[in-house]
Length: 121
Length: 279
Image 1 (cartoon, helix red, strand yellow):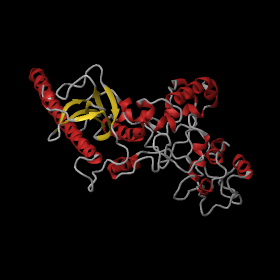
Image 2 (tube, chains in turn cyan, purple):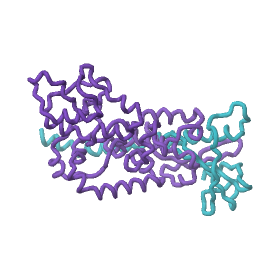
Image 3 (cartoon, chains in turn purple, brown):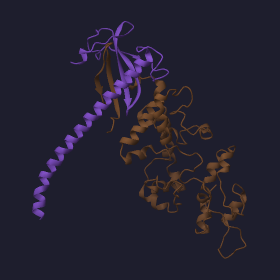
């Protein structure tokens, strides 16, 4: 799995954690940390025994130009950007799937309709 | 390109790289989110529903829907007298105005009083829980489910869904939500619901000056002022176009409520206009 190829270096109370971002229709509406006390930094945290810690989206979700690159607001803003990119990828994939499905159905219906037209003429 | 309605993304931050590792289009776990951002969820859900749901599904979230319930065909035919809503009254918004005819039928109101009360109780109960259908303003904006104080408030936005002020959203990151909020049609508390008298709507809040100011009489109006008992007597008397000594007959309530100035509508017969002036 690629997932375990990206180590997570974030910890919440000495337990490894990964952020989960939730979106509703291209709007980031919140998120939380998935924490697992029994798993390591190279393991899948989405397993029984995981806990959730709220992501501190408290005040602002804008990047803090004065703060360090690793401060909370900048980090969460980057999380939001990455989540939206993932959403964009999912939307593109869905669109390609829909196009492929339509192409298949059109080809299929065209094959069935063609003899009907010939019969009508 | 349409964004999926829901999405949750698992991220991994390893310090030097940050990557999405899992994208879920049907996520659970919304209960783990910060409840402070429930209003933003509401806004996002409404915008997403408006853009992605088919047109027929939008009507289920109609903020002006007075009593969403099925109407039997016999009741539709029984309530024949119905003022056709003018354009400004939102005739184009109602896909099927016939649905509202039964609300003018008082017998049907009495017959379904128990069912409607049960429905209102259900709506109030569902509005207090956090589920997607209850997020919409349609339940909270309903007069039966909303407290009376909401109706008399000057804040026309739904308090449950959109808490305005510093606790809501401070940052410009959510400017899109606020932009979308303008697009959300709010029910106008000064406009009557279907089958409801205009003046009963106004009298619900006698202290509001703006409500009184909305009654725009035509410039040529020399009859009695609305809100007095004289109008009631006047509209119930017979009026013929030949009797020029009489003052201009009272326009229908729908005509009075035009914002850009009312035209007195005398085309309708006196009997039907008298029944329209229900107090």
